[in-house]
Length: 256
Image (tube, rainbow, N blue to C red):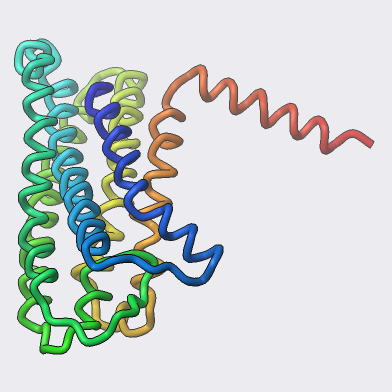
């Protein structure tokens, strides 16, 4: 598990680096010029890393399933070589899957030059095109929606199997420990896939009212920011440190 969490941390470090610098520059200066090559490069790398995270969250589900439901076979089935192969496959699949939407968007003819977004993304770039992009939008929904839906269904199915196995444990302490292990993963999955579906496969009213820009902040900034907190709060030492800090702050505030 910790191997995949370390891969997730490394991936999200690059994931945030593709958008946050331009986002901060835009907020500070209200204007940012970016070349077409850099814009489409940002689009491709951003979606490649996003797809890679989607596949990585999918891989983490069977890892937890084997650890909880088949603990005696876990180290034989999920050894370090298998973990490295699976993590490498998530990166390869992610960068391959992003080629379709990125290449289709890059080949569109453009009439406008100002992107109404924090960074170069699919929907804002399609609004700058001189031609009808309805067909392209359908392809994006099928590619992104199908990949995310299949991964999410399998993830939920595996965690459903985990829940069923955990409920059969005789000890309440064992059940609480197992659910604690899975709760952080489920929280991260819901945050990531929920915001992705709203932005890329959501209702047109979300795009019409500009809410997609607000939702995009969830998976580009808020989710990577919360993930380390979600995972570290499971650690007993971190919990004790947070408790001590909270008590110290409360004591300082209560002083006359």
